[in-house]
Image 1 (spheres, rainbow, N blue to C red):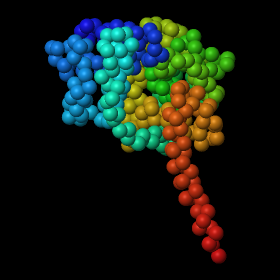
Image 2 (image 1 turned 60 degrees about the vertical axis):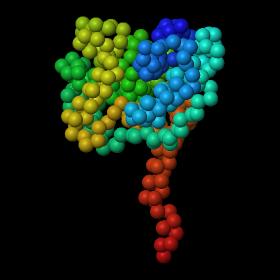
Image 3 (image 1 turned 120 degrees about the vertical axis):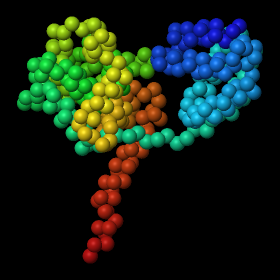
Image 4 (image 1 turned 180 degrees about the horizontal axis):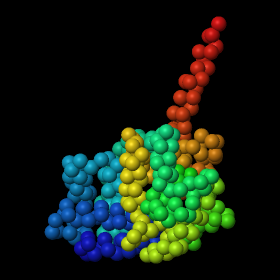
Length: 314
């Protein structure tokens, strides 16, 4: 069977039978596409073997792919190979004995500095009328672009939701009376986050009120652009533009807002298992990376306190 035909069946199976996001399915498909290009014209399942796959990975290394990208590519091909064996399309798994690519130490998450967040939020609020701590409906109507950016930033910062989850918020999943938002995260897993700040709750309500007066193309979604749903890429671009307008020397990204939310919760003493649920991590080990960030905060606090030095003061 040609690899292209097998790939088509495999991707259909991933979409229907595995708890994977559309992004992950596309990534697995891209890995197989890259392998097909390496093979050239001879693209039959019968030619799959360990040596061929190692040659492919060696060529990928020469292209300058990072260890992380190579590991993801291997993961995609391993999954495809196991599926082929399970379906009886090949006799044995050619990747079974392939050596693992060493895992580098994970980088600590970067959080946003407090002074940068203050300047960013103040800059965004200038474009939207804010009176007595409340966002005015008129201000949102006059400056919908800036109001959308401000609300998206505030939601990511206070709930830790991903930028893709923010862009995909459905109106039906926003409950203002309960002050909750139901999200659909990676692998189509659902979870609930909470609008604990009264300002955020009022802002969301005012935004929905204004939004109801507009001729939006996708009435089911909270955030819209002129012609299409507001994508994660568009939100990233808006945040980058807002950082530039606020004259920040260190740009804030959506993922930094998520990291900041997690770290602040941990510093406030919230149980790490609760943080895991709020962030939508399938594994606690993923959430535990934030304990290292808080360790850095603890080190700074202890150093500033100068506990040992105080013992020697006459």
